[in-house]
Image (tube, rainbow, N blue to C red; front, side, top):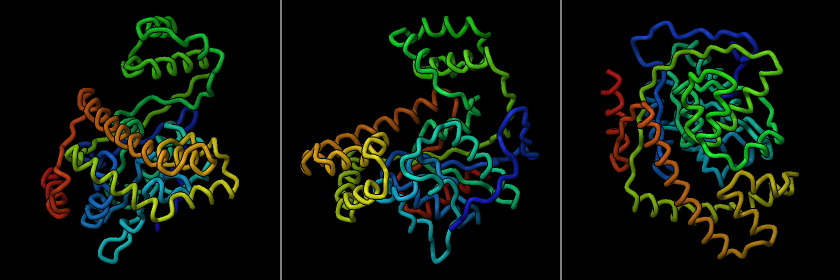
Length: 326
């Protein structure tokens, strides 16, 4: 499988990243969708058709050893005997806390790398924040958390936080004021750069064709339950035990949520098997609903998503993308 290549550039202070020269065509294809929608299989077949490579947009598949619980399904990256190169999978050890800033940086390294070989990158995943951070070129900063400041801002309303943020600067990036969490982070960054030299970063222009895999709610729920049972049979509990025995702290696995949270709680004796299964099944259903809420929010914020029916044959979905590309 594709190894992580040496980067063509690094994101740091006063680094300008070149934009793609041809701004009249798409320079990225993005396939997004909720969990259990079949987006990885779709993306792999499309990548084979286009002779290109996939960049993962999943916040947990980047961890080594977290395979069954994250649904890496690496076999899906082999299509008709052809191995599809992939990026941003298995790049960090379990226990590491990867950030959106790091994803954006690593994404553009892979993006430029793939383009350097004359190929059209294909971003595939279900982590909305990661995907939107590159599609909308979020101005992210590698600024450490300020726990004291966060404590001071805790409990304030969004309008109050916006007023505080406006005291630092004129607001050009309205995405900073969309949620309380983002606004607090923006204030944290502004406070940091009040006392430190500010970075100047230019990101490549992204002209993305965005495809969403639309799956009926009832079918999605059915597939989620079936897949959960399958993963438990495949050894998801043993996988968690192996991670803990390998030195990954239970609290770090719980931090990742969903499968790793509830299975870990079962392994350390906090939940029975039945309690674990029930809570996890509910949590995954809720997670898939939040994913769709995020994607609909992306549309409201200006991202055009072309939705395709998840139940269509793969070749029809691939054909639909090729039509849209033209």
